[in-house]
Image (cartoon, rainbow, N blue to C red; front, side, top):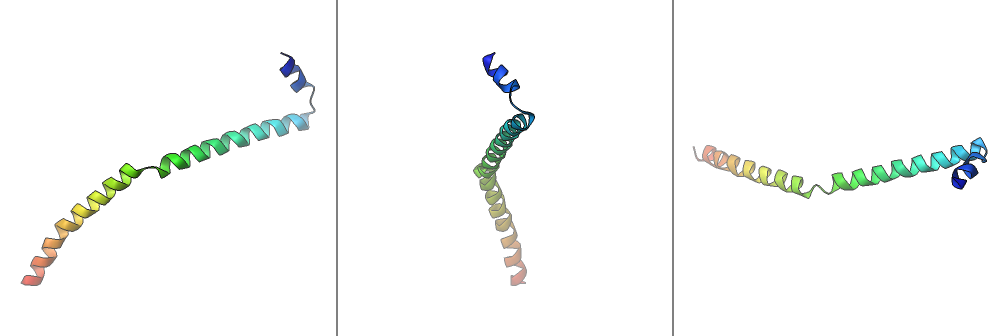
Amino acid sequence: MSGFRSFTSLTSRSKNIIVAGGLTGFVAAVYIYTMRAVGSTDELQAAIETFEKQKSQESLPTVAESTRT
C-alpha cells in the first residue's frame, strides 16, 4: 500500500501526466498489435491471388474463342 500512498501525495498535474502516459502507451501498443495482425494476412493475399488466376484463366478461353470467329 505504500505505492498507493505515494501516488495520492502527488499533485493532480503529476497524476494526470502519469495517467496520460499510461493511456498513450496502451493505445500505441494496441495500434502496433493491430497493424501487425492486419499486415500479416499472407493467407488472405494468397487466396486472392489464386482466385484472380482462376478468374483470368476462365476468361482467357472466351477471349480466344471470340477472336477465332
